[in-house]
Length: 151
Image (tube, rainbow, N blue to C red; front, side, top):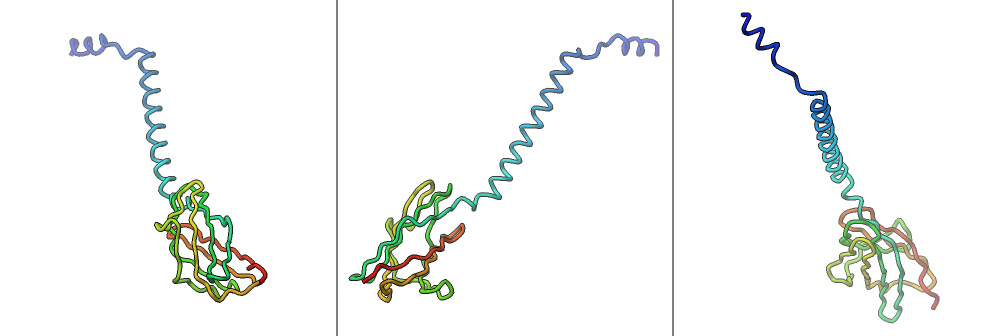
């Protein structure tokens, strides 16, 4: 028994400097792991908020019976245009089926990408306010109104 106690007493503990360094390494590791988890969590919950559509211009062509809407995406994610609605009041918007897009991919790329949407809408009348809704596959739709030019 005496030999065992003598062996335990003869061992030295780690130095205070080494103990301090070990605590610093453990603390930094915990911070890095927490940062990685929080970053992943926030990216997953805010990923769909990157589409932000804005109206650049509306062009009216009475001879062709078309309305061209220029839409810019100022968000951080690409926007794929899914549907376009037009009406003479905000309550009677009708989804348009005769629509062409430039580019044809219907994508308004992030950070300023523009898409031109041409709607064949032969029933628009001069000097009338029309209401529009441009709906992307993800993100909030762009809703606005514009007055057609005088005859």
